[in-house]
Image (cartoon, helix red, strand yellow):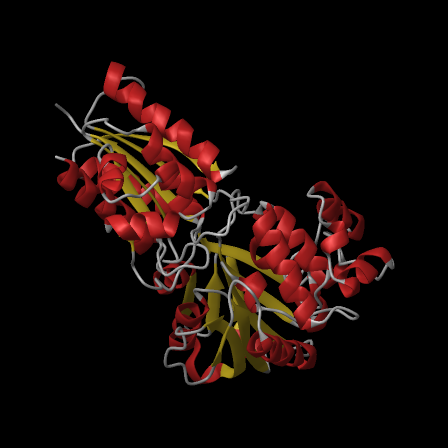
Length: 439
């Protein structure tokens, strides 16, 4: 039964990933009708534009760019999109620049400078199509003086390790960058800007996705500094970052600023759509299904215990669902790194849950990233069941100790229970699936 439930859990996750396919998302929301480009509810008369530029960044950037290029073809004057290593594709009109994620690198900085140059030369009769997806914040690094790339890299590592959520991390990024927090829109003004967004952010907050390069920023320099103080790491922040956040530099453009008058930000895909697809697949497999959350946040190991408790309750009482039952959620947890092990938030989620469902029959739990990556590992996540801890003990693996050391990757690698999909070309955050089989 456990092996069957495992296969079914992975099928449900795969359905969620397929629903977030970037090219399909673009095609659903962007159409060409004779000489008009239709984006959502807006219509753009192409003859009104002298030039069309395509820019952007993100894990889905390559596939989004290819979809736009197929639609607009030779109408595109030039383009440059920053994408992760290994995601270049075969674009002809748009340059796909491979660079580092989650820690930005010099290739990303060079590409971001090129994107800024394209945006800066766009005129009032030009159209700039901007493509933003998960990972864009790290893939679009153009540090604002006096911040250097090395200081931005150090700051990114500090934030990733302290347990800060994506809202906090991107608040910082917006205030040490020239492109984020509406900076790209400021450079492109007075051109028309159409931004297509594949959201990896809970709640689809436009100014948080990719740190909102074409969106008015609701946060301030004071907010950014307060985040460092909240996590007690202000004294560890590089000198250039501290100087910029303390100097009272020109604020990021805010909602309502005239530079956004000709900007449309259109969400073409999200975690919600992926969860809906997972629900359809679960029901097709015969499970009674409940969506527990599409805004999952919090410390991975703590949130995992809630899901383990739900599995126990379903198994014991049939509440809130009678088996065969499927509980699905989407979102993005965080990990406060205290050990020196290897892992990611999804693997840590699965390990913490495994400890709580140990010995429970006919229960499977998995958590994985729709982008195919989880932290600094080659796994998307991991899968666990009631036998996981017993199997680990036979191999001499100390589940509790490895959890304390943030060593979830080596734990699940030893068991053969890592979920490895490779890069999926999309990113709409994470999916969690809990299956409880019938008797």
